[in-house]
Image 1: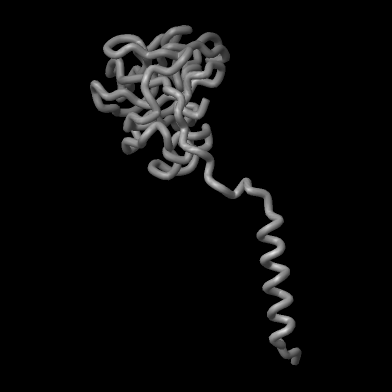
Image 2: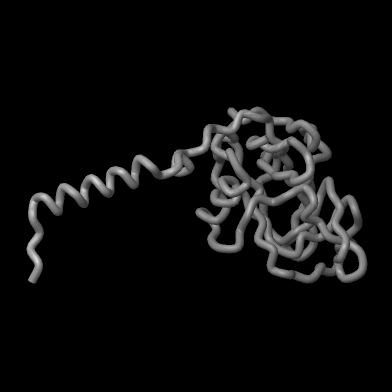
Length: 179
């Protein structure tokens, strides 16, 4: 049996401290988000438990620069894509595609907490589970085999509160809190 001496413990502690000091600073938390973020809202209830979400109507949505300061506290528009087929009564098009899944509103969070897409997705995953993520402007699909994507609004299964703005991502513009 090998005995541990005070010298070997001190050497191990020194080695561990050296490794910690040499570690990159990437383990530190990212700074809070400060950019205005794009928000959407429920636009309509549809057939078979569906809902249409988007930016038009009510408060304007700005997919180019964001429309809501990062200091605002709002739910995240969460989406779980599961390949759901288009229900009868919905005809997807460029401006109102089918998201092939379910949407839900997270608990309200301050936009400054959404300092990366991963941080935003983690809000949805923490509340609803694996496979959930923040919904994105282009999540609506249309056309043959739903092979094309559009924007501005989309349909999905789900229930959302009326009159509530929801943090929503956009991948090709600087209109997210983390931008």
